[in-house]
Length: 176
Image (cartoon, rainbow, N blue to C red; front, side, top):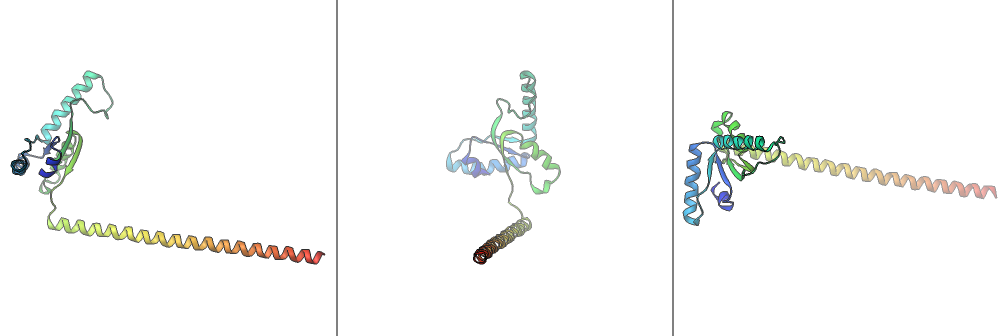
């Protein structure tokens, strides 16, 4: 997360709670001493969402805006939203959804998976790759079969044309 922010220090960092905020600040502080980067702007998702929602409602009322897809003035342009830890599943994901709404453009950054999750993701990725390869092979077989069918149909047309020509020649010779 810290390296991503250093590459885009104009973005805001949105965290789940105080503990995450402290972890991010510690990681960024280590890098800031090496790079001399500015202090990051770190917001907690729930509070930042409520602030944006309030500003948005006020802007919509004052400007008479009814379309929901317009972005209000003064909104945070970009944010990196740190996903809540897996141990907070369920309750925290509603908060994460709101945190993704803090900025006009949000990028979700997730934690490193534990060994089991990483292994399962690897198995799933292999299954998807195998399925795609199998589908490609099946499509190739279909294309080869279709090409053979087209060649066979062309061969039959040529034979039929030859027979028709031979009959015509035979009729002309018999009629003379």
